[in-house]
Amino acid sequence: MSPRLATALDIAYRAGRTTLSRFQSQPHVVYKADATPVTEADRQAERMIREELARAFPAEPVLGEEEGGAEDAADRWVLDPIDGTKSFIAGVPLYATLLSYEVDQQPVLGVCYFPALDEMLFAEQGGGAWFNGRPCRVSPTTDPARAIICHAGFKGMAQHGFASGLGRIAAQTLATRTWCDAYGHALVASGRVEAMIDPVIARWDISAITVIVEEAGGRFTDTQGSPGVGPSAVSSNGALHDWLLRELHGA
Image 1 (spheres, rainbow, N blue to C red):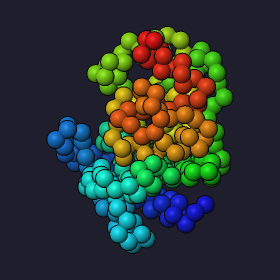
Image 2: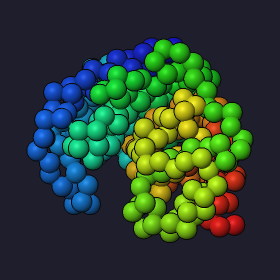
Image 3: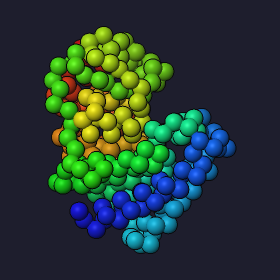
């Protein structure tokens, strides 16, 4: 483990733990211009991460959900203090603190911590993926009839033209579930489900989890099949990826 990853793990863990004081306590919610919710826990955790990064790595650029920042920097930190704010405000423990480091705008390490579950996933290029201190791998399932597919919710899938595709997928699989946001991708990386579909994302939503899924042996593309961090995301165990994209588009 590199010193950079060790520091990222420590910062994400401590920032994530700060959110617990406001979890399941009916936090005050403000809605941003894009109608997405934000709480004081989001802002506090992001400020802490930025301050800790500035101490550990002075002058390195940072891009974050709440304070913006280094949108054009090639090498930078990318963070989301609470990925899954809707889960957080509902008192559902499926939210994460995400932190990654990118080189030439490609994630080379990622940390995904679920404070309310006390679950930690992380990866570094070439070092494999880890879940709660143990190596993790994607599921070996090759039969759609034995697969569980996660997605970001019917409303989002329908708004982006994937309602029919989701129906086709649901008809052929063991189950479809809306374990969404970073949690769905984390389930893929740790072999607990076979795929996760996100019809629209921001970079901070997915930068950290991309490298984790890939280091776990999975595949990560956008909904058109292009690899890397894009405007949408499909993570899978690899074996079902092409089938999933075909059914999603009705090809």
